[in-house]
Length: 237
Image (cartoon, one colour):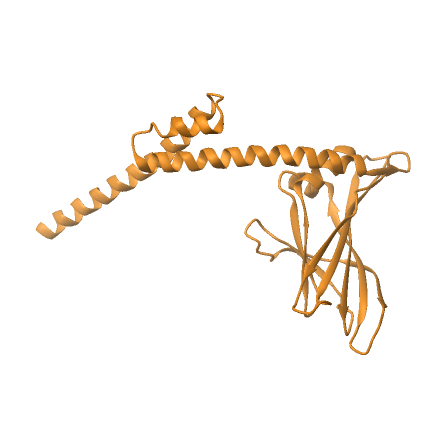
């Protein structure tokens, strides 16, 4: 009987601690919203947070306030960048063809000077003027110095934790051309396309997206930023 009472007491105590913890989390969110609603500067927000009752609450709310500040700054940066991208979108065919600006990036893949992949991409859209339906594709090229072409064949969507095992689909290979060949290899430029729906792009516009492009022995990640999509979709209507 004593053992049973002891077990019940421990269970009640643990439940009570759990409830307090949940309450603290909820209260920290409420306190953060309350302070943000005051319209103060970030430094003044932190002063308000320092007035809270517990050091733990001060720490949690201060972190949430800092995160909110950082998100606001990033949103402002994204808006500026999105406007730059939108100004570079080209429209043709009586408002039926859209070409986003080309983005280039160099990716170091090894220790040698030649161990660099040059990745270029842009988003292209085609609008059916009779139905209003817009289809998009990610047009990309990967240039690398290798003994053989890589023969990319598929792509996987990556999630926010950088796990790339979602939504596998085939890619359309446009060309694969070697140049500057030596005894150890050539510069290969492999050009390909990945079809994207209008719904997918608009759902991804608030965060951007990343695809892993797969070959048999190699993969590359192509990240299209939130600002790029915002700018492109502002024009593509």
